[in-house]
Amino acid sequence: MNTFTIVFDQPEFTPGQNVTGRAVFQTSVAINARYLKICIHGAAHTKWNESEQRHRDCNGTSECYTETVQYASEINYVSKETIAWSAKNGTNTLQPGNHIFPFSFPLPVDCPPSYEGFHGHIRYSIRVELDRPWNFNKKEREYFKVVPNFDLNYLPYGNTPIMQKDVKDIGAIFKKGIVTMTVTIPKQAVASGEALPITIDIDNCSKRAAYCVRAELKQNSHYNASRNSLFSHSSCHDHHKDDSKRVAETRKNIKITARTHGREQLMMKIPKLAPSFQCPIIGVEYCLSVKLDTETSLNNTLHCEFNLIIGTVSIINNAIPIAVSSLAPTAPPGDRTESMPPPYFSLTPTAPSDDSASPSAPPPTYDESMAVTKI
Image (cartoon, rainbow, N blue to C red):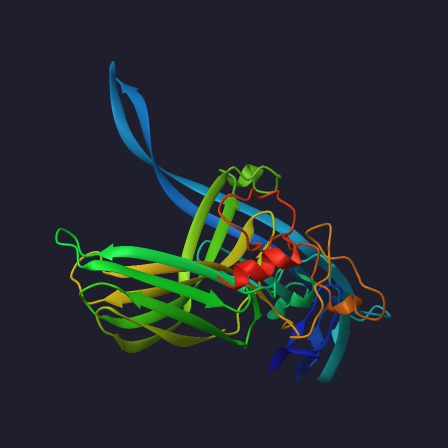
């Protein structure tokens, strides 16, 4: 009887850190073997199939048919191996007993986090292989998680309150009147485990009551791939696929009667999620959707959406905003280097501004920010 076990020194690792642990091999009999190899592998992978219409000539007539085309891409972030044991003195024998082989592999500082999606994934693993002559090799693989230190305190506008408004004349053919919903959140950058308060102001000038407010957090994933495996390792990823799923929700039954107004609050608990990130073939973003339902059969729901950035280090309330000139924050003085987000992050928080502001407009002044907040 012989068994392999891979044990990590900690449950999660951060980019730039050494992945450490030990491979434990237990055997009750002597085994013929030449060497024992330990490997680390980490890669992003996307894959999906699409049905495409094709035309071909058949006896002088054009015939239409459906072809299934596969799209796939892969980017390797770490791939190394080491020989932990090899036969010596001409004897290819691993003696009975409990054998422990420690390992240590450095992770790149720019590797993205572990992620599992519908059309792709990012996985990191340690694999152990015992080479046995004239026999099948003994193999074992164990996956581990990579979670970056994505410190939200270094994002511009991450701690700025944001407000959205929706106005609707509810009802379809016979209109029931105007309902206005104003939604405010205190910040757009949150960490897993936080509770995000959502304030909803309702001005109901209609003839019908509003009876429910609800919010959901959606994870929007974007995948890129090449047409076939021949070009899957190239930098040209010319096909795209999107996927969205709900990862958290909350709701509250209310009673805002006709021609009245009121204020409600929801608390959205952020579950443990992969942080927002973007690599060449996989990107993950988050969106908070807030809805108000009214007592009409058609055209009865008001809706506001917010783009959220999910990190791993929460914003400190008294943190001073830091001006940055690039999307990847630079290291501040002192010993805070390890808490910086990895350089692969390339999302830009949305600065509070009016609809006429262009994406390249400079940051608002203090007075402008306060004016937006007080709307």
